[in-house]
Length: 222
Image (tube, rainbow, N blue to C red; front, side, top):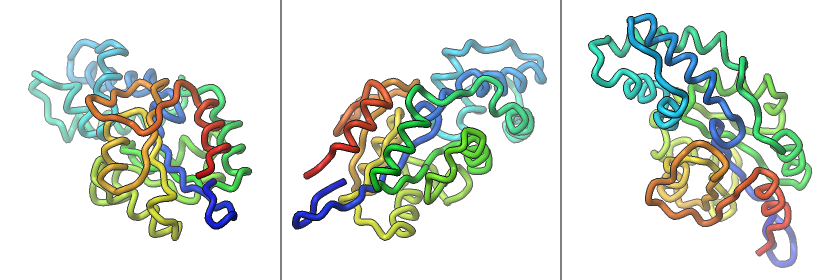
């Protein structure tokens, strides 16, 4: 929380999902390889699929089909149909997330979700892990016109929360999370424990664990 004339104000903490709250690599890779096998293609390794994650499901599918003569729209439908029914086979929250989200909420902070993962799948995951009740807004791919790093989702969350940009933080493990914060004029924090890549962007704050992130925001005063 921040101080204003001696009084504390809540922060608006906007979280990414994949690589920040949950480790979903195995289930995402399973969906991609199910799709590839359907078209007679060999499976990709977990590391290769992981490197394609972060810019939305269409980009994930396109990157996974590089060099293959496959209709992307058909492949996208196959991937989505499989993944919808295999969301939580191996996906788990990162250590400290379930307890940490409750701690941040109890501290008075306002929590929101902004991810490039399709909105329906994102909300289903949050409900599965019983985290949905802590978030005032959950926005995913297809819920706003443009994906991160376009600022559409941040602006919608800001408008709905009635919070000032100076009180808002975007927290994620991918360069799009840092970039969307910069594009929207809010603060950013990088989750280096995730599987994303910040490329050449510089984060304001970097966290090696979710527990460290929680301690920082609970104790934050300016």
